[in-house]
Image (tube, rainbow, N blue to C red; front, side, top):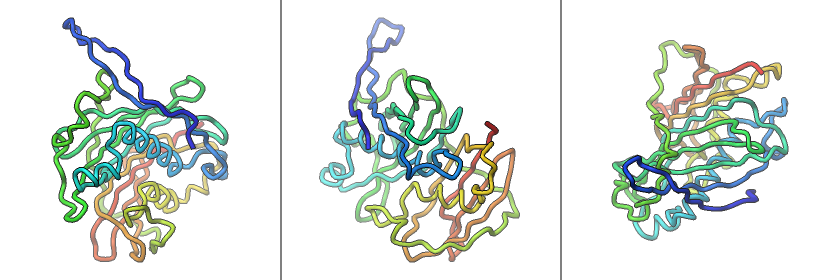
Length: 265
């Protein structure tokens, strides 16, 4: 999928006479025919897929990939929250260059940042929050126990944005009762992270847009696992100029929250 894979280091300066290194991964990913919607715009789920591929490749370069984390620590990566912002939509055949780095491994969660470029022009950014969970118990594993993160953060590149939970208003409307299937699942047996964006876009009926708008911002909060064979209710609403979607299990447990911002072209 990517035609460029590299881990780069560049010098930065603390202002105190000390030189530090910014470590980041950079890869280029073309938007292909499977990624675009009826308006020749890269679907939110496809963009999340590109970000996920870049994050996976960066983890491989740092030797903190899924297989290595299981082998060394019996833990696996789980995405807890993600947000992106675009200044314009992405289109079929455009090469999207993703630059990504992490902010350091402390506590139970780690931030990974992204910048997106098309032919050298910065067109977007993203922030994600990840946790490590024990393969057997699913208890969270403290990231400061991972030696591989030492000295490999993005340094001066690190963003300030923090991802908090989404506040959902009262009175959300039931838009769809959706059964989850084989095609929704990933290697962990859970619904794939990117599929939640599809659920949100479907619940909001984005196929009804006239092509003069695009999803300029998306935030997803993953609150509980979903698995094939389960069913969820998709509830929708709006607040502060954002379109909101909440996924709720049949037992009444909230599985995810999503907020989308639509901008005019």
